[in-house]
Image (cartoon, rainbow, N blue to C red; front, side):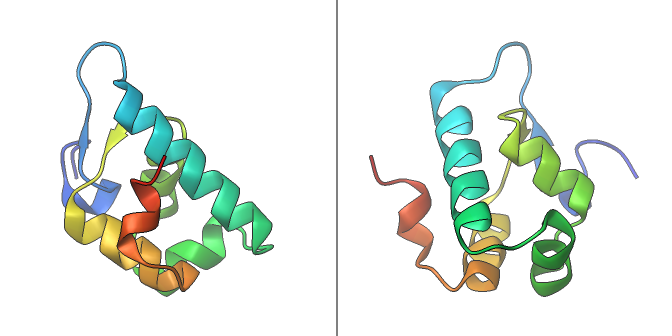
Length: 85
């Protein structure tokens, strides 16, 4: 399995992380923590590997819309929440 594999939550961004990747990662971590959920629990509920969630939360992962949708469902939130300012 490569870092570009969907099992890792999408592609890894090349070079420095963009602001949107950092925003999504911070939003994911904040929502997950506010709901008292561990990375492992979100992983089990979403089918996204814990390593992929960690990459996304750190702002390095480049998650697909499908991956974000699976994470949103696991957190019981709307997909658009990841993109709100």
